[in-house]
Image (cartoon, rainbow, N blue to C red; front, side, top):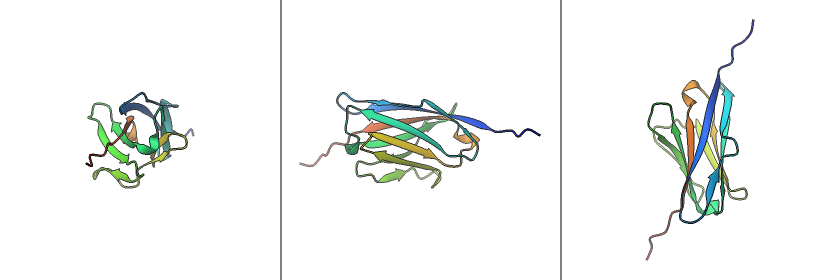
Length: 127
């Protein structure tokens, strides 16, 4: 008897919110995964130093508003939205490759969405 695998397609797009000439690239624009597996989506920055940036990850399900999932501050502290299930989404930032990776654990049908990464350079307002 053939087994039925549910496959989900996850898409990643990037946005750059910085001053200057940098940009984001997504080496893999979509990822198809079997239910309950782990998905990893990458965002690669060029022309900027990612170690000094905050990286934001968003999810947009079809027909729904975009939702902020989490972000990584320039000091590598990860902050999640209160309504995001702990352990479902993880993100890291690798300055040596100017890459941020969003990891989605235990992929389920409701995870089929477009995922956006964005970079933000915070400027100090100290006088």
